[in-house]
Length: 75
Image 1 (tube, rainbow, N blue to C red):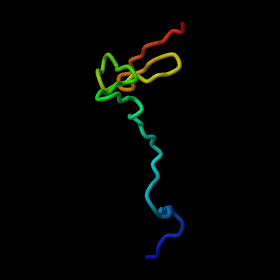
Image 2: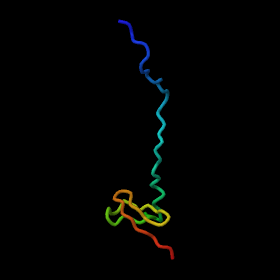
Image 3: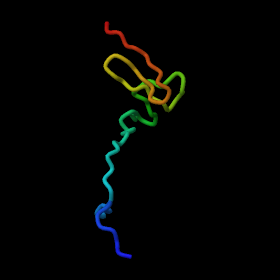
Image 4: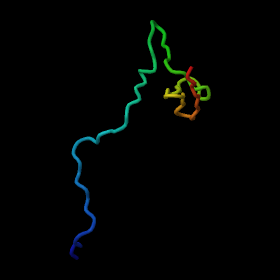
């Protein structure tokens, strides 16, 4: 039998490693070192506990895990 003409073609093989578009989390920016102690800069989530920080937005603090929200009022 002869091969059929037309049809779907395979994409060309890419050379080199695939590029990652995922952003890094930069967790080192959430802590400060003072002497022998580590201090957290952001507040922790009251539902999830220590290790889960509240993200700081323009008018609210939000937990990325459980979606807990605290609204901040301007004084």
